[in-house]
Length: 335
Ligand SMILES: [Mn+2]
Image (cartoon, rainbow, N blue to C red):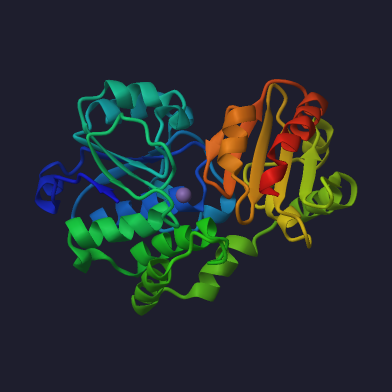
């Protein structure tokens, strides 16, 4: 645990109205859950803050308490820049490199605010002043709950805060099944249930919200665009630009697709390639020892966690897949 928090609730109170909460671009359940959980917590404590995220996010997160107050940087740049310039505290949640918040990173770097990083990813950059970081923790939401308990005042955590935090717990742990799930994760979930959080309701709000096109896209991926290589140990799926257009993919539609490969008996590593025009986006997932983050950083300028990482390629889809197939041979010892 890297805990260099020096501020307290009183100091935040004094700076009410000058507190920004932000998270990585295309924020996921953990990023939005931690941001809105902290926002709601501050609201309960009588402290005014603003959530500004770089880009939009999947619509299955729109039910989160406080969602209507979120500002999207790329849609409202001028007003967000003014907020950031005026900030006394900036909370950076669920990311550890300013490039993860796109253009907004420049404003954050230039600001005179105290920057607080709360995160669980590897290799944090050094742009913060105070941090509450545990690499490998299940989720930023779990860390937000601990940060509130250890540094602020837990009496302002209510059911709404709990719904947000619970969202990050289950989205980042694949509903408590990934190896990052610890007894602390489960204890946090139990505490939130005691506050009134209803797990099955949150699960349905998050996951049983598919557009029909999304499930059809998944059907297409599994039926036509999935290869099993390396003696059944690698699942490789892809979506071409044509697929992206034909199924009218919107933000969040491909979330979780990469995990289906890991569901195949014998598969140790699953890779998904999505052609986004100028770049091919990649997701890697593994079980046990295969180091997705090392593989990605050594071959595809990416990074992340050992069992979950991302990457990007400026070559075309076919070239990228060929490069992957060649590169993976050097990692057979992990399979
Ligand atoms: Mn996270």
